[in-house]
Length: 155
Image (cartoon, rainbow, N blue to C red; front, side):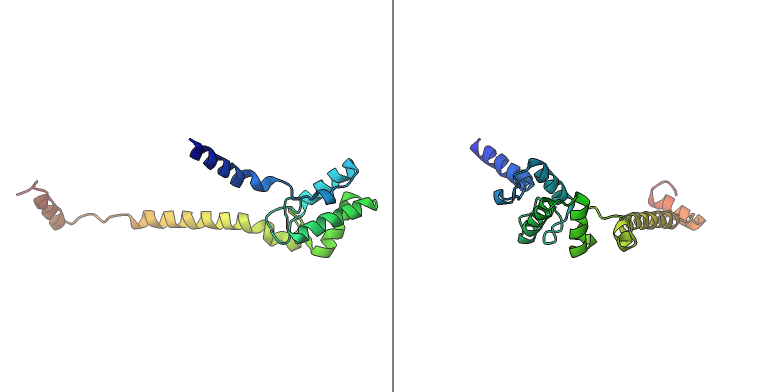
C-alpha cells in the first residue's frame, strides 16, 4: 500500500512539479498591482534558454534577468506594451510566446497547416493508388479450371 502512495506522490510531483513559478522572493515588487502586471508580462515572454516555457516559469539565469528587467521598467512607469516592445527590440520577436502574424513569422505560422495539408494530399494520393493496384485481373478459363480442381470442386 505504501508503495502505491509513494508512486502516486512521485507521479504527481513529475506531472505538476514544474508548474510552480520560478519567481524568487527578492524579485517581488511591494506594489501588488505592479507585481501582477510584471507576472502577466512574464507569461507572454519565452525563456530564450528553455524555449518551451515562459520566463515566469523558468529558473534559468537569463529568465531571472528578464524578470528583473521587467520589474525595473514597470517601476519607472512604463506601460505593459512599452516593456514588451523594449524586450522585443533587444531580443527579437522570437522572445514572444505568441508572436504576431508578420512577414518575419509567416514560416512559423504557416508551416503546421502546410504540413497537415501536405500529409492529407499524400495520404489521399496513396489511397487512390492502392485502390487501383488492388484490382485483380479475371481468371482465364484454364486458370479457372485449375482452381476448381485444386479446391476439389471439379473433375
